[in-house]
Every structure is written in C-alpha cells, then in structure tokens.
Image (tube, rainbow, N blue to C red):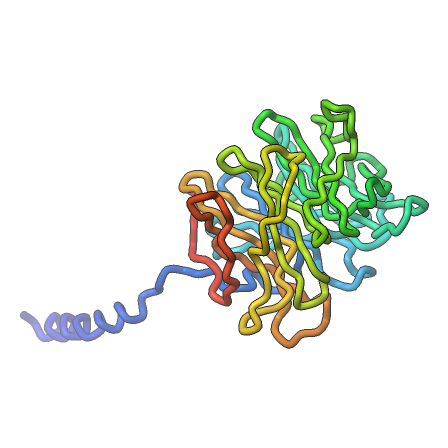
Length: 329
C-alpha cells in the first residue's frame, strides 16, 4: 500500500468516531417555532404542507396585516409576508386578528376579526377574504363583515371554521364569555338557518369560557376547545369539552394547556394539526416569554397532543424543545 493511501485510511479512521459524534440528531422545531411576536395561531394542512396563520401580535394600531408560515415537516418554516393587508379590506380600520383559513372548491378562504367593536353601533366584526393559493394574496370578499353584531352576548371575534363529515360548514366564534355556532352558506357569503330555524345558537360550554373556540371531530365525537383567563396574563389557558353534535350540549372536562413557570406563561388560544396518515395530533398555541410583562409579546409554539383510551385529551406539557420533524410526504 502506498504512503498516501495509508495516511488517507488512517485519517479516515480517526475522523469516523468524530463524524458519528457530530452527526445531526433528529431535527426538532424548538419553541417558539419561528421568530417574532405572533399569537392566535390557526393551523391548517394544504397539499402536504403545514400552514400556520397567526395574529401579528402588536399594539392594535399596528395590527394591520397577517403573515403566514409554511413547513414541510414542522421544523423548517418559511415566512410569507403580508398575505392579507388592511388596505385590501375596505371596511377594516384597526386591529386585525385571529385568522381561520380553509380550502373550499379550490379556493382558500381567510376569516378574520377586525375593528374590535364594542357595540352594534360600530362597524366591524368577522370578515372573510379569498385567494387562489394558501399564501394569498387574499382580498376581502364581501365588502362588509360576514357577522357584524352581537348575538347572545358574544362579541363577533375569534372565529373558527369547522367542516363536518356531512359537508356542512359551521363557524364557532365569540368573545366576552359567550360562544355561538352558525351554519355557513356553502359559498361563505353569509349564514343560514339550521334545521330548527336557529341562526345564532349559543353553545357556551362553561362559565370559565372566555374566547378562542376550536372544534374537531374524532371517533364520532365533537371536541370543543377554548381559552380561559386573561389573554395578557399568566393564567391564560386552554380547556375542552366533548359532545355528540356540533351544537353540544358540551360539559367542561378540564384544562389541558397552561403555563409552566419554568418554561413560559400565558399558554392559550390554540389550534391543532391532525396528520391522518398516522393519526398524529399536535397543538399549536401562543405563550409569553418568562419575565416579560408586555401583553403583546406572544410567541407561537407546538407540542404533541395525546388521548387516553377513553378519548380524553391528556394534559399537554409545554416545552422549549418543541416537536420532532414529521414530513407529510
């Protein structure tokens, strides 16, 4: 063997243990999953891609648009800036927040809250914009709010859009400690009466309900999640109930997401990813950094979400590590 070959093999042998030690471990997202102040995350899966549509968590006067984030694996995220801007919503004047985004008939619909109305005398409420792609650009669809008034005491904010197995589209929404459900028209241009003639049906699950409703279906049961506590404080948290229909009745089971004084505070306003191919569930939520007292300083994070044998949601442990890579392809 020549001198160069002997040296080369010796060098390779010496480097192999080091290479093994420094080989990358399974990638983890770490929390928060992307930089910046973002809250109220909406989670969706479109075309084998994870999407998160959050509120831009700034003072109301500066909440004038939405960014979106996409990922093939929950670890590597791409920012799509300003997918919906306030200048594309003629009736919106301030405070855009709490997106809900769905695909319907090849179009993408972006529901949002605007103007933070305090009474029926003000213009604002829940609007809807439309685009041809998940990353927009989205344009206001109606030229006015979809829901622009208080019904059953619910402020028209924090909407979540739920597609039931029978093809019916519902919207669950509401702040000020009241939650309503409405049946959406198939083209999302308005709401229509349910089978019993009700248009705005209150489904507030518990006195602790504050805002941030979400609904999903699992094994024939309807899971209703919501946020409790004050959104700027450490007691913000997520609780849930289970019912036999989208209208309930729902009875509070308990909290499943809350602060950990060693990790972060104010963990709330969640959404979920469900990966159907292996029935994996993830909870997406926002939280406050430890020691930070600015209520708008909120960051988006992801954790695993598990169920017990009876279908109850197990308490979620919030972490700094986040979740491992889970490619959809």
